[in-house]
Length: 147
Image 1 (cartoon, rainbow, N blue to C red):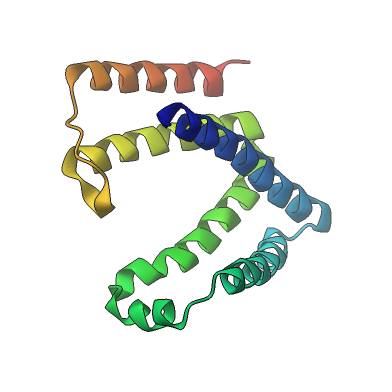
Image 2: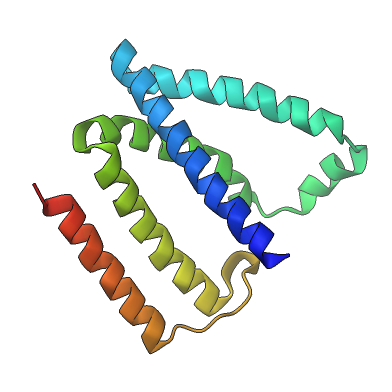
């Protein structure tokens, strides 16, 4: 079962890369990444509403009162994140953008797992993992600074 989940996350990474690159390209074509981001989020919101309506249950909406307010800021964070990517990627290139994002995600994920943040199973940082992060950062540097 885990192999399926690993494959799914790999596929999600591919789709995320395409999605973010598409958003950046729209921003470059219309010469306004803010408007491109807004258009993408409107389409995304409509899609999310449609998906939510498929499995709608009124109790789910009432349970949102139990959610800490700061967790609900994830939508705003996502919009700002995609805008930042759409603005930055055409300037530094998709390759550099993605290796830098992956490095940030790996480091953050390692720390979140170490402390069990946001429901992550606890997986302590080890010397092996730190060596992997060091190699990852070295690879990022080689990728970003190579001509």
